[in-house]
Length: 431
View: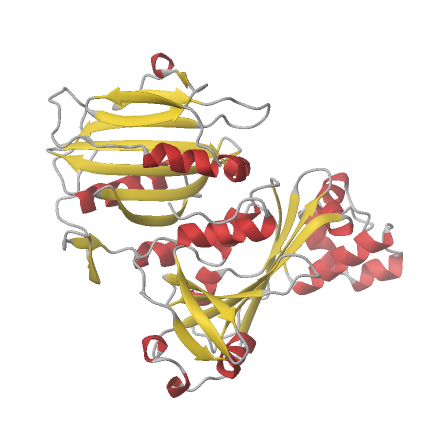
């Protein structure tokens, strides 16, 4: 595919480019540290893509800047989910999703420290536009060139700078051999958030029955399902007679007539949790999700998971971000640096939640806590298998005749792998 025509830009020694047709709207944005703002073409009802260059006075290190940025975004976006942090152009690249004013955002931020100044370039697109604009985002960041020396200027300072260096990641260094910041604690803290009602198994089954019947409950039936009916009423999904409300009909419509569907199953030992999503023909995707990966890691695998499912409706096109958050995709330094082979029978036992002897696993996986999860994109598709290793790293399982190959995959590419399965036109692209 030919590259888009580009508009070359330079500011304070920083060089980058955006597609022609993007507009400089810097004059419309008055924020400390914002040096240049470019905005792409917009579509009705969809956030216009943007590229924002920021420069601050920052008397700290690269690891401190990375830590401060994530902490700041966590305050700005309460539902922030950081997909990945990696080395980029001698600095860091952070990819994350968030919601602002009801809009689902997907942003990629590249930053570095040059002689006491922080330089950052943030490219933001609507989550639903990632398939169409993923290559554009990659091209913008690939064009970025930092200056070797800072240009003296009166730049505003960061709101705060940590007193000391962040906790280093044990056993990991950057390309220059310097310690890198610990990320696994952030990864385990992240969880999938939903504003939808929390229902138990019996309440979900009653809702399915009401949806399928298209009518309410008789007097005797209402007496049988008092607590379940009350929970559905409190969630405004049905009325006192068990008739599905207009709001309830909107939520359950994709279940009755789905354009596409996906099923994700996580297993940690004997514990199983399921997420199902149905994309409707008229927009909107209904998600029914059990406890997420964060809940799986939070308690001993010998203890049962809570009997609860969250019913929610999300914007079509955001399903990959939902699934990535639910399975625990997040920033990490890679736990595996090469492919490893596991006997097919051993991988089958892992996938079924059956016990596996440590000696049956390759040495690099022995003693590690494994969350096995599968994704089935449609009832006629074969499920694909993945591993969440120690809650901080991911791998895809490629099955062969008599063995399974565990292939490390970064969270940024795991997100794209999920998108490829849901939106076949996207594909994965290493950037």
